[in-house]
Length: 223
Image 1 (cartoon, rainbow, N blue to C red):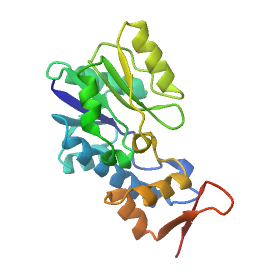
Image 2 (cartoon, rainbow, N blue to C red):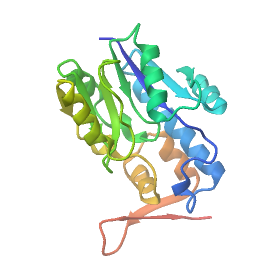
Image 3 (cartoon, rainbow, N blue to C red):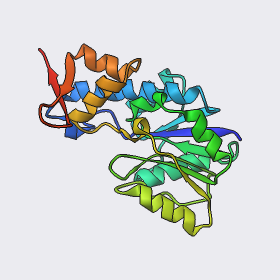
Image 4 (tube, rainbow, N blue to C red):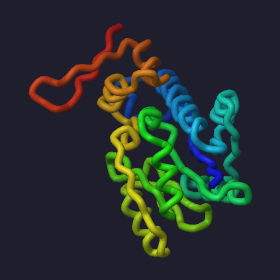
């Protein structure tokens, strides 16, 4: 089956504000660009087309420079509205779409081939995020509604099952890690060898070590 991967990106400027205690606005933008490069490169090796949808001109210009297709978001949509627009755009040419966020730079460490193999045997394949969200969703465009948002993993499973669709859940640490906190940056440094995101954080002089007396990571930076 021909597959189009859809990557929604809201904007670069003033994004990832939860990282503001750790990264400046320009540094957060640099990280977002590095992560989008990681995600798009990983997907391009496995799918027929990669499509970035955004209402932000800077995002679309950068995505185009990465060699992926771009789609300007029409009107003032929420995330699900933008994704429905992108899925509808893909529908005439592609039998399935694969929705993946731009902030999971370790996606190249997982088995994307296995995800697509499952999609040949199940109507829907879902990879959960660590907080209960959805970090990958593969389905036939138009076959189900989209429920991205808080705890969307459970809502997507429920939505698919309510339509009589078979569901495969793909659990992967690398796919579950979306980047929102300083500790998430530590996971990139620890596990992201070969990624643009890790290289970028290393250039910013970030290091990571186990936190004494805890199973959490201690992320530090030298200036």
